[in-house]
Length: 271
Image (cartoon, rainbow, N blue to C red; front, side, top):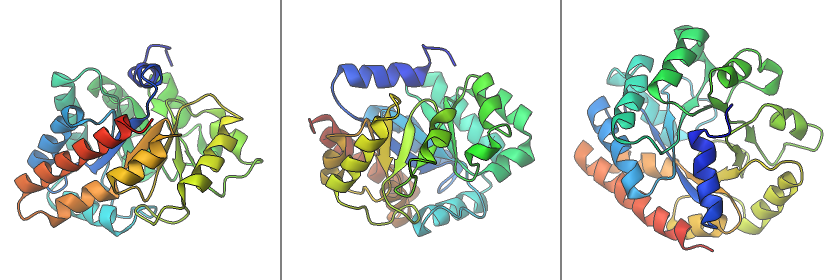
């Protein structure tokens, strides 16, 4: 991994500005390809500092109802890995600066073929991967090849990641560490910011890598509280809920981008 990757440049710039970054998650193809792409293309201007794009999967076991339903909507409308990578290419036509991370599960990547997937992902402009069901014991499957392809492999740590487990989690992690602030699935209620801050500071004693905090952050006020100590604030289910609740796909895009703008302002003014 080079020292001048898009991800590293972004977190260096955030550090220089003394602020956290806003990390947004939406599912590729939700509610359909065209409107999902419109949302994706609007995220940087709305204030997203890092974009997570979900790779829809039939059995997203770490996700709550909101993201599970988002995957189902996307798959029902024909979303697949080819289209997801094409969305990244479309983003790169107008934005060469915002880091983009593909997030999901190993099965779709395995079926696509790891070598072909990594080659096409790097060519499309993917900066990182979060694959929630590949633990460090299986780094040779995807993590190490991804690093060799110039793609960051972003690992998750949780409140149950103890001192014995943490070194293995950190060993091949790059880009940033995603701290899951609560046990359970995405969209679950978050613990108190004070508790999360103490847990993040304990991890910082072992690494210099940026730490993004997610799970259960839904409002600008919650985002601001986390932004006071985290390097990144991750919001996903709240955005996916906006898509689900909208009367039309166009309204869904507008609603997502409106919330992103509110979250970005809160994060920027938190310190």
